[in-house]
Image 1 (spheres, rainbow, N blue to C red):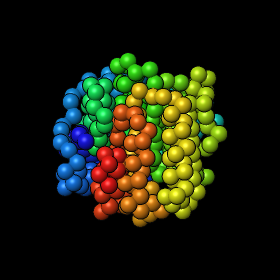
Image 2: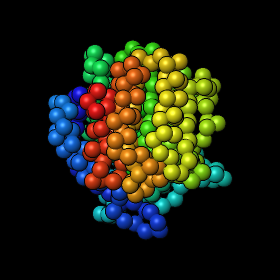
Image 3: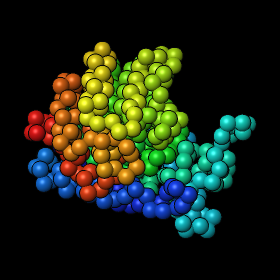
Length: 343
């Protein structure tokens, strides 16, 4: 299986507001480096750099004004004389009347953010572009006839909505890939999110559409980030009603229950009959992950890959979460090895 990877992800390393303090983010460069090392150690396949894409390729999944904000946010922040990483300090919550984009960067950061976990620094834009470009390169390989590919994306993307960043995510790599696949002529695409956390951003982007089926298997939002989306009754709106499937699972979920949800997802995929499948591959479902509470074990990820292969659809795997850095490589690559029948 081909892996697409860019070392430009190292330009971004941030902080986050968590547990009442600003500290080093769990989302760090070592995550991608560990996965890459495992890809090479197992002989998974060739590793290539992503192609370059114009930022217009991100529009469709995202709005033009949001992409423009991301591209210019650091310069606006630095122009105020501040050298620390940019984090929002106010959000447009329910009851505040204005829907206008503020002119000052502090207001813009809040307008386009869902949390204080996605800082912007001098290298963030280059890093997120390289991440999105990896997904775009991967989907182009599928459009060219490849059976599968792995976009080793960092930063991740599935919490980024049409007009907001959050949860370590800026551009929604999986959604950008799915959108490009549609633009290249696919009639139907599916996005399957197996990250522990609900893919709220991907849901937001495709919630009113019937050409992209979104399925997310995740921790119950009553007790799990992002808290405000991911319930089973969120099924889509308008033309998209019935094309959004959330499968929330309780604390302590192990492989037996996770597998039942995955098979349920497969049945929905079969009904949709997609031309391509994008898998948001998070392995923070692992039993030792520091910010999650499922109990999948390393060997279980081989089984996840085996099941996804049975869906019989050209598949792009897009790296999302997984914060047990010592284990993320073997767990993520196990999914890919299972898919290839190399368990």
